[in-house]
Image (cartoon, rainbow, N blue to C red; front, side, top):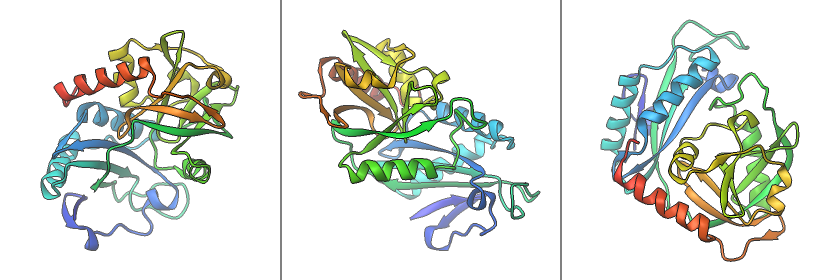
Length: 273
């Protein structure tokens, strides 16, 4: 396995980042995860644009997009696989201990791992912790993921693959690594970015391609929605057949199934929409 680290391909076993890298010591970094099918990345331009937005939001210099594209192409060519998780990580780099950044420059890592196709439906839980819709890094895809690790661990303990958060005012927000959609009276709704959720790439495409509405939703909408589905880079669109103790028999329902078909067709026809 080969990865890209700061300017070139390295063997995974010999690739090294300083123990004082700011991404490690304080989580000062941003990242993107892309789906790669037969060596081709999906929606690379959208992901690179969001990577730049996240970097700006942290006060990091924007990464060189041409270099990131070269890195992605090199890693994909060096590690052929049918379905992969392509991960771009960009951190504050070597820095002193503490929150202040150093002056050594940033760290860029691009790596690839094989991944299985997701099931058509899954179980989710809600968790008692909240997303802060007014936080300093709200809406940025940062490497500070400890909260998601804890929530996802609880989901796995309860036989689910995802945990859903409300925000500080009790509105539906997002999952640990996904956006959430609900079907009410045949219409698709998803929380607006103002709820504190990440502006997911797959979320944006699903909204565009299915005419879903961005709607401020109470958390308890999950108790009455006709259908529920998740979107993310590696899930695409995935139906929910159980939320907490509530079963949604027949998932994916007709609206979700149609959305899944539309997404498969549109994404297959254009790898960089």
